[in-house]
Length: 313
Length: 285
Image (cartoon, rainbow over all chains, first blue to last red; front, side, top):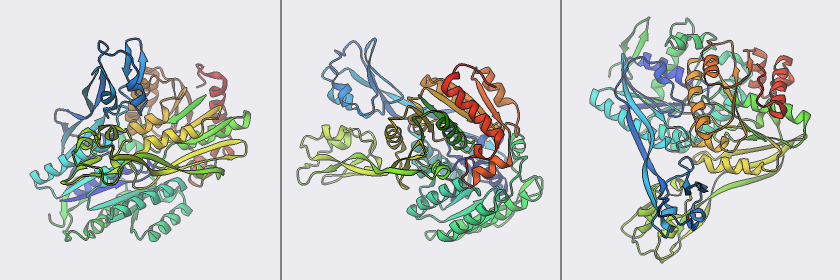
């Protein structure tokens, strides 16, 4: 199984739209929406969700007001400002609490217990292109990395079970915790950028991270025709980091309307060819990992209906 | 007065709004600071080229073994909730990148063989652009814990009377760290299917934190009316709607404050500044 992650550094460059197109071009894959605190891929791939399952990670402190003498020892020990004096004695703020247990260590009355923390929920969706594994992180939760790791584990299991040879991961923005979880152990990373100073600045940060992970990478320049100077800067950054520029996709102002109809740009002349060229080039990224022998990638052409075409699994 | 400019979805125009709003506020009053807390992808500096007066490294506390005394009992590893200490046949191994700096391991150790040291995770900068203060935080590539750096970034701007906080995208711990103590959240929305879905999540976050919330719709003419309808339904004041404009997009792409190039956008931003300074509670759009 080959695993490909799509990230960007800056948000809003087009990760999810491109992933939606690539799912269609792949014809058959297991997809993962790893942007768990703003998960949108499911909006592009219709299908039926299985029952949502709860995802528990970590714990939260609960103070027994019957035992608490308000001595204040826990207030001094907590480094997250999660405890405060309230009407019923010392209270724990479940948003700030990280479940570390410092309060329980120092409480002389044994008044602290813990409840499991529901960090989010997740499900699998059967679609005509294979399974989508997606999730919703609870608001203000700090376990996005763990949830992403869990989704990827599940995707890997489904790919093995169903004999699918590709896992496509729609990554989160940034370069922090959930991005690490999204790219750890993948066979290749695609960074989607756009020709703006901000996106290029964040592209270089994403490439630095990928370099630290030692992963094969490629760049896709989205909305390429919006700014010629920026487009040339992307080419420069690509050659400086010795990462191939896989292709460019023109700006398509009707895209929001297309996305609303669960279309991804493959319906538009010019965009379709650009997406297909990028998708073919991704095969080179996935084949360039030193730890795996190259296998032909299953690519499907798009002629209104996706179908498996060239290559073999 | 602290205003956070936030959004669930990335790329909706947070930095566009935050930079221009801060600049407009600074033109009419003193003590304004722009504070970039999108530490994983900080871009505000591209629009301001600030003069920096202070640049420092940010560090968090992590445990390290003090030579010789560890008996290998494993109490610290058992107490750590974050998997940052793993027991070995002899002694323990500390994984500082997983540490949450809670201090529980030190208290758990019966031999007092752990002490805390600093681990650098990012850079903090403070400076000014003419009379406006500028602060940003930048997470080192390879580091995972954004929230402590975000708190430190806001703290470094502490003296400012009016802070415009450019928040990271999302609704998880990073976004919460940026918005949790603000007086007002300005959500930058996009009238697209993704934008609508992520606005629902942002509204949930603001409600969970009990924050006063207002909204702006960017590129208001590209999608449909569902974002506007959701704001009406949730009773969130819509302060402004900004149509798609190639001149704004070009200014953004090239690191130029759009309000200095596009008069229509400048008057929208001035309206936001009025609201922040004196009009809270009133609707302007």
